Length: 246
Image 1 (cartoon, rainbow, N blue to C red):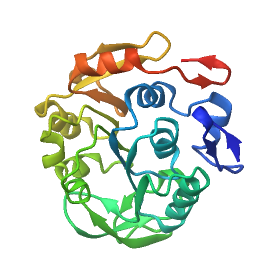
Image 2 (image 1 turned 135 degrees about the vertical axis):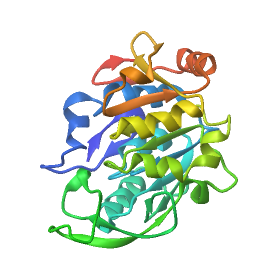
Image 3 (image 1 turned 90 degrees about the horizontal axis):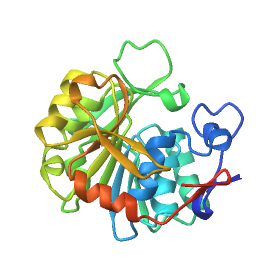
């Protein structure tokens, strides 16, 4: 267990492909995670789709005090996510769902032995795999609307967005952090809903607009209410990360 941001802790182990980066770098994905720290408030609700072992959910629920739901399909990873929330006292604040997300309900095959890179596969995938339940963002959100949503689903992003049409259309959803893989389809959906790709400087609290045409595959901060989000970021309390205030 390592101490982390805002009084939280992370359970990690040698060989973790993701969590250990928070030990060495303070924040595994510095710009994106700092954006979340500065954006969310205790009254907000979030969705963490592809939560893995729970780093973003710990930030959002523990460091920021927001409530939300963390969605993770692979059983062993889901157990780690649940333990991560439990050691941080977040079980009552962050609901967990042991399922994947797509554009429909049902079942899909998932790899199970690739750590944070587990993904949707087909039935002919040669490695360890399981047929696991899937749902949609719209079904899981119900009447609630996230202020912020993370989508990290290793290549299945466009199908998750297709199952989130209602949530994406709600103006209360201000921003996403999404791992874009097939950038054309994913970015088209986000652009249609008025989202803009942005860069964030957490030390200067500066949000800068970009263009979807310039977006490459990888993590993207997508913002809809640029002015409102910029004010939120500027007004956020400071956090200490590896001895530095952001």
